Image 1 (spheres, rainbow, N blue to C red):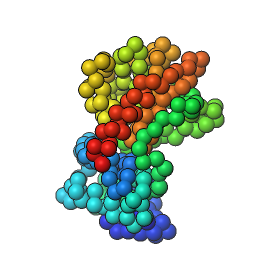
Image 2 (cartoon, helix red, strand yellow):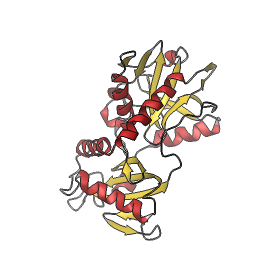
Image 3 (cartoon, rainbow, N blue to C red):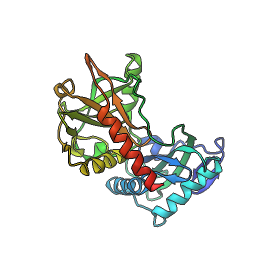
Image 4 (cartoon, helix red, strand yellow):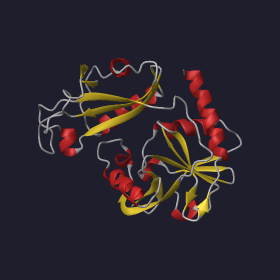
Length: 284
């Protein structure tokens, strides 16, 4: 079942109109949520990121778009799909409805839809025996700035970058901005570990304002034994790193095991996953 503006519909009845602005112009935003046994992980962070992004895109936020209202609609959709006592992946999509060309018409109204699917792992794990190989994606570049960091429906680089990765037998690719700095992976934020120091690109570089990125930075801030820096990462630094890992809400932390001729461990990433799961158990 799909939730369209609060109405539960079957997959067959949930077709978008061809003049939907999210479809025509990418005039839409989305949040990908992990929900376990009816508990939305990091819901407050997701909600405020969505509201901030809607303001940046000059969307007229409906008065009923409160945190409580959207949470109820998400959980209603979870229940309709018999996933209230399971692990689920949820997509909350917000668009400006129909009407207008580039300029929305006066009739354009913000609307939402929610879709869900089962997800295997309730907590975050790292397979220490798994291989995860990446390379740089250099066909196209991201413009620095906060607009690039919005979780919008315009994901052309992520789509063609994923195709490139598959064609070349990579598990993922790292994305560059127009200054040729490494800013993120195709599906998450990037962290670099070197001599006990942790580095991740700042949001101004054009990387996603990731919810899991925020959680990791909060965990690291509590560890007096590490130094954390939000700073540019050059491609030359990648092969000098002790560890590289990718973060997103669905998978948590994904260690990179190989970039070109360099192989990496995952000791720090494993310790971080333990702390992350401990935090989640307190929230559950």
